[in-house]
Every structure is written in structure tokens, then in C-alpha cells.
Image (cartoon, rainbow over all chains, first blue to last red; front, side, top):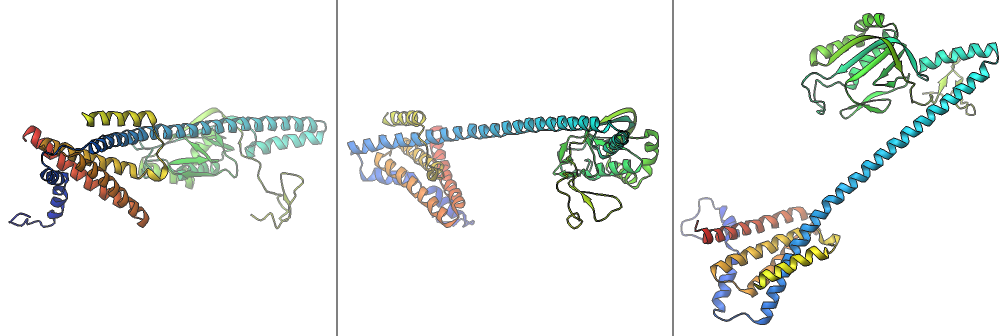
Length: 294
Length: 110
């Protein structure tokens, strides 16, 4: 301790830490055995210590280097698995589409054998279009939702971002304006298709979509373009557009083609007019009214 | 001379053999390396001061590594392993700084 005390007494700890270092030990040892050369065993120990120190350094550096490629490899394996699974899903979806087509063809053949069947086939075709079970083509209108200019699409708290609520408003407004079929970015909507968000991504039918969001609706384009701004959903969307700068553009289209929904058949369906009867898509499992409660 | 040869052999051995560090030892390896560095810089300073002593070097290295590892082990058992590791590294780093500063003063006279 110096004679004049340090005004910052707490610094003493730091100074002690630094001063109580190897220099003191070496100085003391030097005073003790001045002039005596180190013995053989001491030399050996010294050499061994050098080897150990360098070995420690090398091993820890090598370990660090080895750890990084391992993590990269694990990531690569995961990416491969994701790609593989996506390919599997695509193959299965193609199989589903093929089977549906086969089924429709077989149904067609059976039904066209009688007049009653033909009428039924026409009705099924109409219902399938409404239910999103088959692809539809026709004139209509395309509504594009894009984030406000200059907004960061990755930031979840960005007010200029398009939210799931905005897509819901667009879709609901279009249904209310008389749309017959709607698809968002090529994902066909059915009566049970969910539009929701997961983090910053918007999921339609549980598939993540990439902005901008293009909502295509088949119907009377001119009538829908007139009616849409007057619906409550259209007004809400207009408000979002005015307040946060979300860009909404509506264009009429002469010919739109909406794909069939990949969603499975409804798990439960109710026969209109008969509250107790429920029809299950699989014929062997007709359920009673009690189980049919949602 | 012995030191240079020893260090060279150590590096070659470490890189060539690439021994698998057992899992229980992995938290102690970086601490041991920092403790070893502290001993090395202390030795370098002593060498420049002309008071280097093999025995002190070996003992300071061994005690540094053992005490540091023991502290971290004790911290692990008490549930403050990360904090003790930080403390050990901070203290050793400060000593390394002090030694390097002394070496710099001696070599560069600044």
C-alpha cells in the first residue's frame, strides 16, 4: 500500500489482483537460489510443461474448428430432410389429385348411364365448384395486397405490413360482393379454409404465403368492384390502407383459373332441414346427431 | 531452446493426435488454456527481467490450472459455474494484461 491512500479505496482490490502476479514469485525464487543452475529433473519438467501448454492450445483450437463444421453439417442434414419431405408431400398431393380425377371419371361413367344420374352429375359438378373441390375458370377480379412502401416485411411489429386480418377482410368482402370462388396466391378457399398468421408469415390453408398477396375471385368483376368498397370488410381494408399505407389494388380480369383446393373433404356434414341426421363422408361411419355437434 | 522445441512438439502432438476431449472435461479446457497463457506470459516477463526459474514456471502453471479447474468445478456443483468461469477468466486476463504491459515497457521502453 502506498503511503497516501488512494481516494478510490475500492481500486485496491484491482491493484492487488494485478500486482500479486508471477513477477513476485519469480523475484523471490531468484533471490533464494541465485547462481545455482537448475537440475536435470527441473529441466525435464519444464520441457514437459511446454509440451502440455502447447498441446492444450492446439487441442482447444482444433476442437473449436471441428465444432463449426459439425453444426453446419447438422444444418445441412436438416435442410435435406425438409427438401425431401416437401418432395414427398408434392408426390402425395399429385397422387391425391390423380385419385380424385379417377374417382370423378368413374362417377361420371356410372352417372351418365341414366337420365336421373345425368342430372345428379350436373348438380355434383355445380356443388363441387362451390365447395372448392374442382378447379374453376371464369372472369373475375384480382385484389392485390402489398405492404406499405418502405416498410420492412421481416419486422413483425411493422404497421405497414399486411396482416392476416387484412387478407381475411379482403376475402370476406369479396364473398359478400358476390364472389363464386376465391383463391389467395393460388391456394383455393373452401368454407373451412383458415386464414391466420404464424409469426410474420400469413398461412392460408396452413401454407405459408409470400407477399404480395393476390386474392383472385371469380364472379361478375364489375359488380364486385362496385360492391366491395361498400362492404364492412371493404371499408375496414380501406381504413387500414389510409392509416398504415398498406397498398390495395383491384383489377378486373377477363379469365381467371383457380385450382381445386387440396383440403380434404369435410370431416362432418349436415343434411339441410334434418337437424338430427349427419352424413359422414365415409359411408360406413354415419354418426348420430349427438356426435355431430360441433 | 527447450521451450521452443517443447512448444513445437506440443502443437504437433495436439494437431496430429486430435484427442477427443471427454464431455466432462470440455468446460475446463478453455479455462486451462487461459491459465496456461497466464503462466506463459508470467514466464516471458520473468525471462526479460532475468529472473526466470524453471521450477517456479512449472509450479505456477500446474497450480494455475488446478486452482482454476477446481474453482470452476466447485462453481458447477454450487450452480454458479458460469459466473465462476467468468471470474476466473477475468482475473487471469487481467494478469495477462499486466504481464504484457510489463513486457511492453521493458521491450519498447514505453
